[in-house]
Image: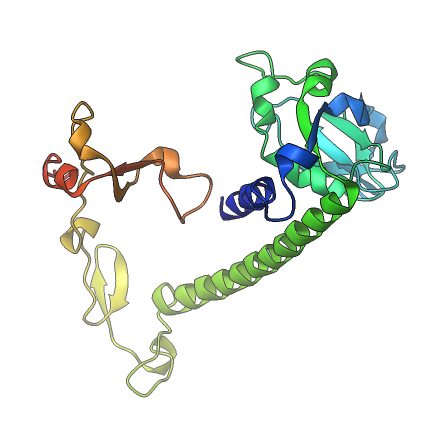
Length: 288
């Protein structure tokens, strides 16, 4: 979510004069005017192999093939699926792109692939899909999608800035995953294998640590079994009356489940309340 905010912020920065004025220099065209499009190919059952070039559905790599159809990384729009319809991706090099996605080949004389990879992510392409139960994007609808087309040099600058941030974020995420794995390993070693440091800073269990029997099995001496709610209070949130205008549009963020987008961290919320709204919210009630 933070990266999508950065992307939108950079486009707005350009729009209001940071690089140039979008209103003056960024023409609006149909995506089909600056690209050609085609669906990927439906793979045959006989084509799948355990090793080879990646089968790329748009959602992810779903297998391998002995041959590839696309040498270079391609700009891809996921055209169908229970989730992810409208997502914009870059395929791996030397890949076999399946018919779950539309391959968008830009006119490189006027359009930069990296720029439109990020730009199209801000466009909510799922909104042009049809079908409630099985949403699907057609080439006809995608070609009609209106996009801005800055000067090519400006496109390249913006794409370069965003890709630099993108790489740094991915590296940070990889570092976080490594640290999380290390933390989980320490947790298992200490609290499942009971090898936490004793008073001499040595592993407890393998250095004669004392244990006691409980209904949950053998545990270190002094440990006890209880409920999570013995040490924490679990309560409901609170919301002020929506019909009272004085309670709303203040500077206090109001968190709701809608603010979560596949991330445990929320940097901003859709709704805000006033201090009066907070004081008049319903009392929080225990949910346990």
